[in-house]
Length: 266
Image (cartoon, rainbow, N blue to C red; front, side):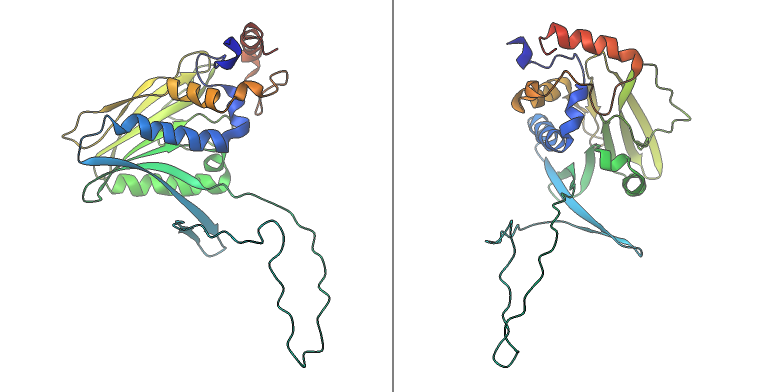
């Protein structure tokens, strides 16, 4: 049974290989954990949008209704020519590639009037790429200008640093590849940044989620939620004989191997 539990005390470095699933599941668990702690006139919702980029601008669309076509997986029916069109045309067969977009999901806490109080972002690799980095930085500024709190949970290795805390102000100790940045926007245009460092060998922290100035903070324990993702996703079935992708720091490789062997996964 030991193999069915997260073999790491904190973030599991193998979960990043399936981040789309872990990301969606973790947001659901965070919302569930917050629901019983919020004041009665606040509620949390998971939001999603798809960004469509062009050379001129980026437009964001929120999906409300999913349309399912009966021909999905093949081709839709082909319109046939009518009388006098010279008969049916022979249509060439294209080479088909299937590519998946990565929707952007986050949690919003609002009051009964719809006023946005706090946004919780679990960062994904897309946020830390060149194009996603720019969009995320813009969102940070917009939320701060609007007096909205922002919780950024960065459990993704690699990519650009994108949270609101500048690397000029914060130095990450060796073995620290994750962190959480909480931005309190109690005064428009002014940020109070609270940073939680998450060393790979330590449990993920219980953090403060800020609400309105008149509300107490809500505690959010992240470690049980990540452990639950591992168990419900049955991620013990992954091939742990290989190095995680992206790889951990060289100084952590021996420790990682010891943890996996103790759990019977190597």
